[in-house]
Image (cartoon, rainbow, N blue to C red; front, top):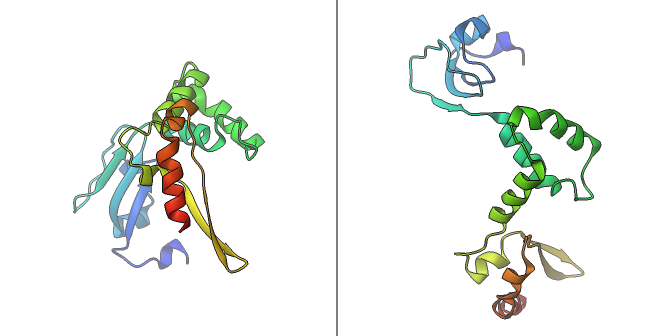
Length: 163
């Protein structure tokens, strides 16, 4: 579908811009419902309330790449991941990427307040093959001692799941 074929009043979201002079003229016929941006708020005018989200995306993207690649320790890490992160780090204003990643992983692996069942199902997937259902779960932690403290209750939960 071409932009000219989009019906008047169609709901649209603006990404990475929010000033009238940046808008395509066709957008004046659309209904802007969301703005997701990292620039200062401009002179955008709408007839209805809209959802606004302004924040530094470089920081969010850096965090996502670090998490997905386990700070480049994952075998799924690509050259693109490394190159993009090299570009993003100065924009994200992170001084020590190793320290930041480690603190992010610490927070992510804090299981205080989680029930044994919740821990068991954090990254749990079921598969069926050979007419049997199998469950595989992955737990990420920065401190094996913390998870080993709950070893008995986790084993009990796994055995319950097995039934």
